[in-house]
Image 1 (cartoon, rainbow, N blue to C red):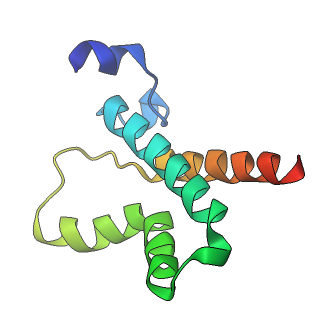
Image 2 (cartoon, rainbow, N blue to C red; image 1 turned 180 degrees about the vertical axis):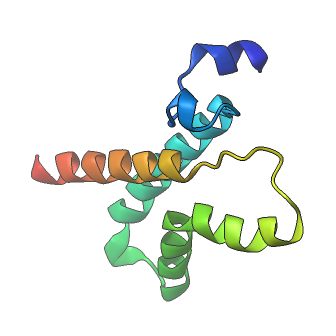
Length: 101
């Protein structure tokens, strides 16, 4: 995991946060991208509960920090908000590209 962390870039400038979690950023980015593609691909077929799940996942990083980290302090000062936003944007662009074909 340490070698992987050095092989990928973090989503924040080093000077803004010396404690980088590059593996976490990668995970959050691609998880959000995949979820965005899956949920957007099946929008007409989503049940009301699945629609709420899609909305919660899109804002999952903020929800996680608001709830989980309220009761247990975060180990690193860094968070994955930027990585999640990148993932949402990547997923959105993949859906847009697919729908234009």
